[in-house]
Image (cartoon, rainbow, N blue to C red):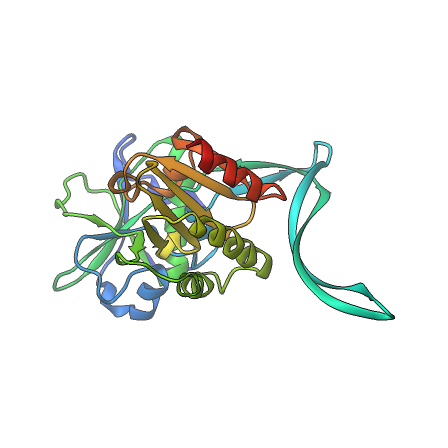
Length: 304
């Protein structure tokens, strides 16, 4: 079924699907949309079979890539801690003041929030005479209706059209999941790493970017074996690998987040979806972004 519009508001577009069977969302002849393809997270150098988590190019892509929440105003307000990067003037003596810029933490109140894992639907680029991109298989079940609608609207918001594919027999595609760019082996000064992190966080809010740089500098001071930067839907994330300890420290510039410490091997971790990475089942440690972050990070490194 071909759709050309801004979004869909009903699940009736999936009525031709067989319950329990997979549905895929496609954009055919995608070479017509070079700018949109780039904004979606693909690169000109990507080969056929490249599989990515789409970039956050619209609000539906945000729900696909990052945890989201709903607000429940029927419950009492709750306290939460918010980091704030601000500039103030402090007394310096002899009728003088000096300007101080610092990261501080403020306690506020807000209504209760229920958080949900991102949908984490990846797309694969398939080259050919009429190249196309296609989503992961999404089984047509009642639990996946919201996921299907969000995926369709994500694609419509990016390209203005899509095809809902109900066919059961599909061509086998050799996929290469590319969500991370690994810094080549070697020793790099922090300033070089900082420049890259500054570039990938330039669209984040100032406080979020400053906090990530502060945390990443301390992590880098612990001498990781390698650094990997997230691309496309993982943009704004960085991984620091400590092979001898068998841990991989994931840092993010997104709000309401934490530093995640994962165990295992990089080959496996690099293939995980965003939802899988953020799942508590895989964490060896989780360090909340608060005033005690530095102390807690050091203790974690000593204990691992």
